[in-house]
Length: 125
Length: 232
Image 1 (cartoon, rainbow over the protein chains, first blue to last red):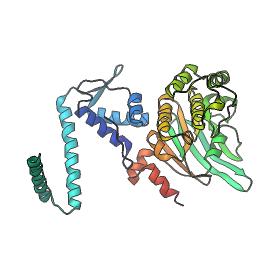
Image 2: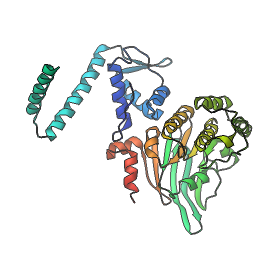
Image 3: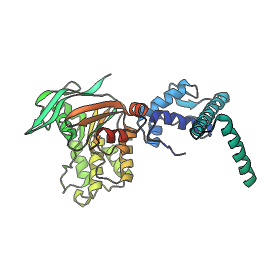
Image 4: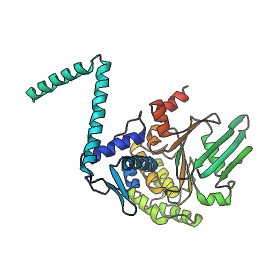
C-alpha cells in the first residue's frame, strides 16, 4: 500500500489515518510487529519525528502498543480494531454529508439519493 | 530544548548591502530544519557564517556554545552550493581524502551509499555528470557522523527521481541526535522531511514554524505559503 500524502493537511494526521487503514486492511494484522520508526519514515518519505508522533498517538488510542525492548506491535484486541474501522467509516460518512449539503441536499435527500444510486448499481452490476 | 546552533542579532554587511539584519534563530538537537527564502535572501550568507567562511559584522553565532572554528568544524558537516573537489580525483581518492580530514568519517557508509546510487568508485570526478558529482559530494558529507549537517541547496542540480533518492539518503543517514539545516527553494520536494521551516527574506527571518503547524493553521502546504509570503 503506497503512502499518499496530500499537501493541504498536517502530515502527522494523514500518517495516523494511513496507519489505521493498514491495520484495518490486515497489512499489519493483530499482534504483528511494526517496522521501526526510521523504516516507516523512510518508506513514507517523511521526517522520523513526524512518524514518531503519529505512532505515539496510535499507541495512546490503544491501536498499537510497544514493548520496551522488542518494538511496537498491533493490538490483539479485535474490538479495538473494529472500533477504529467504525470511526474511520463514520468520518467518511460525515465528509459525504457535508459535501452533499454544499450541493443543497439535506441528510434525508442525500440518503434517498444514495439508496437510488446503489440500487441502480446493483441492477447494472 | 537543547539547541545545537544559536544566532543572536547576527548581522553581516557587504558593500552597499545589508545581507543579514539582526537574525535570531536556533536549530534544536535532533531536528531537520529547512532554511527557505527567495534568491538573494541571505541563505548562503548565513550558511557561510556557520562554517566560518565569513565573519559576522555584529551579533553572535555559536555551534554548541563555540564560535565557528576548529572545534565546530569537527562536528559540522557542510555541503557548499558549489563542489570543491579536484577534477583529477577519482571517487575512491575523494573518499580517502575525506577519511584523512575528518575523524568522524565513515568509509563503509560512503561505499554503501555509492553502491545504492550505482556510482562506480573508480570513476574520475572529471568524467561524472554534474548531477552525479553532486551526489558524490552529498555522500561524502552524509558519511560523516556529525552533529550538525548544513546542506546548501542539496537537490538543486539533480532530476526529480534522484531527488527522492537523495532525500531518502539524508533521512536514513542522519543520526537521531544530529540536526540538519538545509537551504532550498524546491520546497514541495523537501517539506515532508522537515520538522521546522525558517522563512528568510532580504536578510531577516520572517517566519519560523513547524510544517504541520503551517498546514494546520493555514490549510495549505509550506510551498503554497511560501508563494504567498514571497509573492512578487
